[in-house]
Length: 231
Image 1 (cartoon, rainbow, N blue to C red):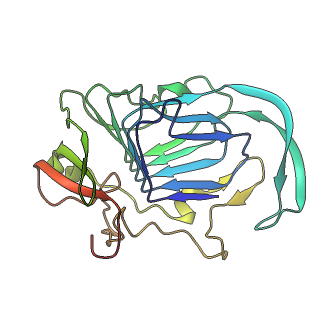
Image 2: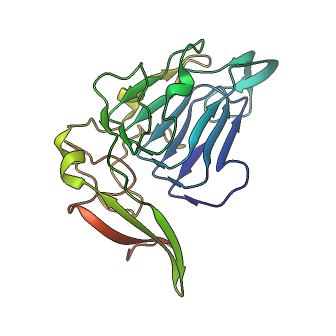
């Protein structure tokens, strides 16, 4: 499964619920603005270049034996219970949330890198050298105009760009543990997250964190829905 370039907001439960998935699945370039961004009863997910303004809630274990499949097929490869973990989070931005501390003491540790934590969002003990700007609140405001939805934010592009990041690729993501399969596109080609939320090109040598590629700091307004080639 591939969840990409979506705007989630004002959901009463959570923006995204992933239940008894063994991976590999990819969630990239999304904007999660509800109080709970993700509810996960899964493992083997990869989350890259998202903006999380809500909490990540992890359910530790489910004993149900559920299927995983052969690559790009519904043919059964096996059955497994659901210990959480073995997820990947690369180059995301977390705002005013528990961040990734939900993965503390889970059976399978996550793989983390290049993430940014703002306004009290908590880095995970599993991430080496996270960029934590605890005192910086981007003041996210979503408004509805005549021609769509706009996101106002104050992001310090200069500080975020000071930390170098790796391009998210099949090689970086590795293989999901239970099915032992790599993260690839639906046609089997390698994953390379070289575009952003708007479809624009990323710097492949040093991609900017989050769904947007920002050149300037300070408060700015971005049209985030509908999106298209002209945005």
